[in-house]
Length: 112
Image (cartoon, rainbow, N blue to C red):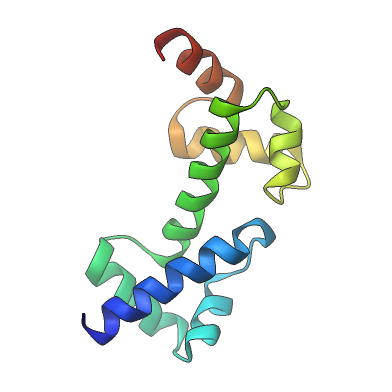
């Protein structure tokens, strides 16, 4: 495993620990002892995306998991994921999935 692959693994672990607190990419770069620009370069090289897209992807994965496997209201899921504004959570989810959280949940119920 290359040094950059090790850094990506450490980054993934850090994101898993801190994603609910919406830490910026600079927080993760600092924790890894490299600059945000260098971290983005590594992430882009190994995943094709940005550090922020990895963070957002983790938030969406967790939101989808909670929508699918719980009956918790959408607003509460947003709060659990660190969003203080339910409308912002819904817009964030819509931007990444193309559906609102409620629409996504309903679609999974019908098709799943």
